[in-house]
Length: 553
Image 1: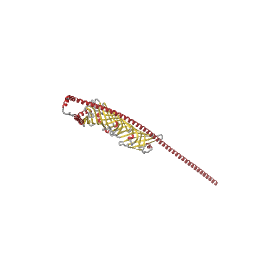
Image 2: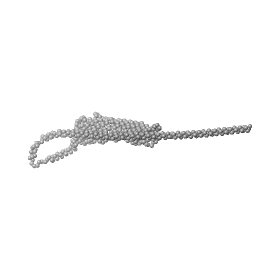
Image 3: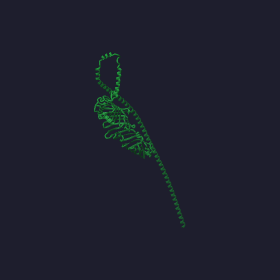
Image 4: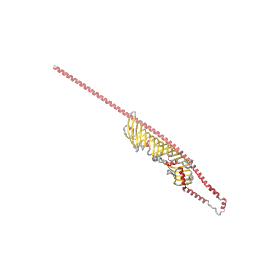
């Protein structure tokens, strides 16, 4: 029994050990299989993640390449379109300039020929009238003397009889007498040109003062000249308080009632011009029909004008009807037409500096309007500026202060000529209302006020590449843009741009900027890239001056 019990216990023990061993082997196998499976799964996961990462990187690379290609294609298209447009505009401008130049030359030639012919005819007629009148006056004055000489002349026969009876050789007195008379005549003619008829000055000053309704002073004397035709000559004439100064005044015919007048070396201020335009004579000179002028200088504080030559047509009432002034310099022409209490104005010139300090220099200027005693109105003015055109209207008047207001329109101005450190190119269009106010007319342009809108087409912005801004880079460069547009206001020397929008292919920007009175610039924009492949944004701060902008994130 004891042995049987021991045997059973040994078998039981062996069985348990075998089961433990089998269990451990099964556990080890299961563990190994689990580890192998986990390893395989980890490897598979790692492989898939690597593949996924590689796929994503490839897709990102392909997307970026596509975007870069799209950007380059868009830029190339924009560049080609801009080049084509610029070429077309340049060809059109060149053609237009040639045609305009030919037209102006033809018009100027025809105008000069017509004016020269009209002036020659008018001068010839005036000279002929003056000579006829002087000859008639001399004949009337000499007729009684001739009649008396004829009546007192002895008969020829007795004289001849006496001469025949004189002893010796005949007297040869003809030659000495002729020489003496010739010397007397020459001396008399010379003296006439230098003798001053100062006694006539008070009468002339009174007559001219009544005509102009201003005080007139003859400071240099009154002379009579026979050549090239008889006329009275006044020198050193001033009107008012010097608003009008005349070097010489020639009166053909009666000194108090001339048939024609020629003015030489004339200096005229704005106030002096008003004196002439709105004078209403208290006396009538029925014979005066023309006043000629040469070397007229308009002393304006608003603009620079050349010396004018021209003439004025005088009506039967003694008042001027039409004034035409022209200057060969810059082909300048001014026509004034009397219209009751107003004066019509037509003006044209090749070059005009405004104001007199040449803040702006216009080309091919044309203007028309009217002026009265209180206000100058230009219904239209236009001229070429910065290879574009600037036009508009003007109302200028003076109450307590000088005041000018109106509207201006810009078309095709080359922005690089205006702000060459900010823009590399582009055409500016715009419209604005303006107001100028000052106590002194010469300071009228110092503090202008403007409000309007603008648009720049096919431009180049210097100092920043917005494509690189999207990528986070600020290493300078340039941005070719399709359009830059917005509103602006200018006052006190400072300009505000409350809303500016820029489009440059797939990139756009929106923001605002201020240009301070000291030319410093402050601005902030949001730059955005929109495409079917990608969308991105970046902030852009602007500083610097109008002489060079600075950009930062």
